[in-house]
Length: 442
Image (cartoon, rainbow, N blue to C red; front, side, top):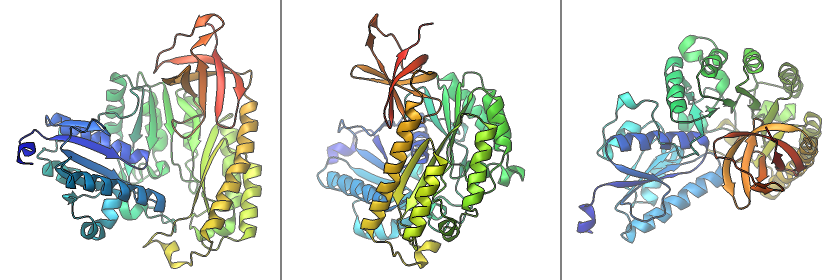
């Protein structure tokens, strides 16, 4: 073991959870590299002596995955495979005191805003001149682009404010500089993320300023697509729709987690909106940005959810016909307002309701996809797998939405595409979550 400690520090960063954690890991890695510390992301080579685990603590499944990962690396430390194990991120922010006692092999625990302290522990200096610099873990042609940290919303089910703190917007000029830097490195798509994009600017500029930010990012040369994730429906700033419609490089796509379709449930969730207002908002969005794809996320089995609420939710989903929809079961989180309510929907029933939601959406997705057959779309090539190029349209975000499969060979021979390039394709087949297409000749 003494011989191992003479080795230079070599860090393996493990990222769990959402795209915001991905962003944070990329910032950490850039800082380590600038300090001449060798760093990799989720390497399986086994030649690292330090591991940093960036954890998720959002819901039960995510927390369990994080704990299992920490335990696996604690075991690796006991076996002499690594020397140091550090834990950061949301789970650590919220549960470090309890976890310290349970997993003593972890050398130090860090919260979501402890980057300088983590770097100091790794004998690295926090370099302020590197603000905005990252080592991308995504394919080189797209990047998650965090515009704010934390959240001021008071949704009754959500522990994110406990883990991420209050909303803090990143200054607009800094974001534009960051976008230019990414474009210079070959990034062509920015995926804007934050706990609530619509809150952007309230703390810095005393107004919702997402529309101005979008316009400035849209002007950055080399950025072909800008995609919006995580918009809150209550108080939605309508002026972003004007910018989206006017700027060709802002994707006609919006990820807006709505959580439920029943007004009764929305009230219990403290969402500040009703079913009727939600429907009116979606209708306005679709009118102002024709052809927009709307992705949403719903919770099944929230405390007090009755069969009538669930039926109302299903009928609402049928009416709304969202382009993309995901559902997860309610997780009873300590220190949230909903934790004061009885978690009275049995787990089996939660799962059944989530499954019914997804089965309903599956039929909607299949119908909407089949309507694309014969139509032409501009797609971005993400990767190559087996006999296909895998691409996406502007209506699809990576990992969670449709993929467009393009054969590497057709009747005319090999199909020459490059990862990170755009192509025009015509849809030939459609399934629930995948489209098949052929390249349209120039």
